[in-house]
Image (cartoon, rainbow, N blue to C red; front, side, top):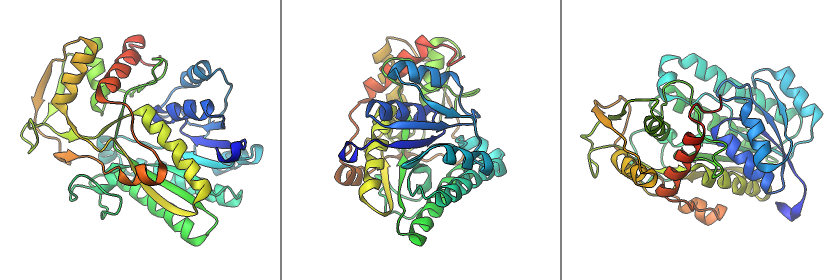
Length: 342
């Protein structure tokens, strides 16, 4: 923290998967945090777990960002030095089925947040964006300066929000913003007390694998084995959620020293295929993962991984944890919490 100055941050969606792990790191680093969350994608139990891990109490408001009156009240009752903005709906497939819900929740929610920040003169924000903004036309490794396009409403909401934040910083030179484009977060806190707890059938690979391993699902569906990759299955850049959390601390620190809007990829800079991840998981956990090959999903691309040079150079951040550790921690979380936070 700059000059070891005490700082208080608002964390939107702080009870969610990435938000909760970032809150732990912030508290460990001496920040104070206030969480706003509507628990649409998370559970209040997460807050108790964070408090047990960090031995600190957290102020939490159950507020929907679209409720400008309630959100303004949160700002009136607290002094904030900045915002880390995680809150939003995040399932690609669901966004295709319910696009208006995604535009309403993600874009309108952020619009209200930015208006309240402007009114209360809180002008530092780190936004949880996504590699989906690179679309399907760019070749990996994906670099921050590449042209953006999207293939689904979820990705489009992330792109729109990035543009909104950029425009705010153009209009008011006192603003500092960092848009973080993450790749595929997996893993869990090493305590096994918090981790990824998706609603219903998981959309992401790792929670699906861990639910198969624990016996909740019979087998893993692997979508497509005819891609132009090492073994025909899709290649993605998987990053440990604790590395991602660390990236947010570095990004907020960056906003304190740099005005304007800045963009960084957070990934490992390396891709793993679905079958490679399964093999790593089996080795790390001594469990077998039965899988079946299904047809490709529409909108899926063969290979997607990050160029991480900019984050390494400017944020002084680099992912530390390897795939083995990601699998170990994901399994510790799932085996200790077979039904998630319930």
